[in-house]
Image (cartoon, rainbow, N blue to C red; front, side, top):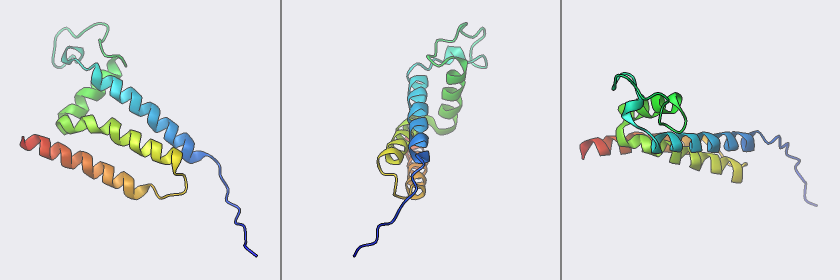
Length: 116
């Protein structure tokens, strides 16, 4: 006779996955519509209103992430989408090793893009 294990399923991982996918879409829109003229440090006067689809917050996020990681920053939404989909569709598996690999891939790709 087989024992049936009851597992509690609160849906927290699915909620986290949906939140990550939403943030991924917002980041992708911020990167797609990035213009340097939205940043007041780079252009005086700055665009008013900001031309970025997400507004000034999206313009500043794009600016800071592109300045820190270069072209590798464009992989941030892709990595977040992969982790979000993994959280939604594979709720029983460990997520920490995959998150570390995504972070490593972003930093490695930004280093490789800097060499080119």
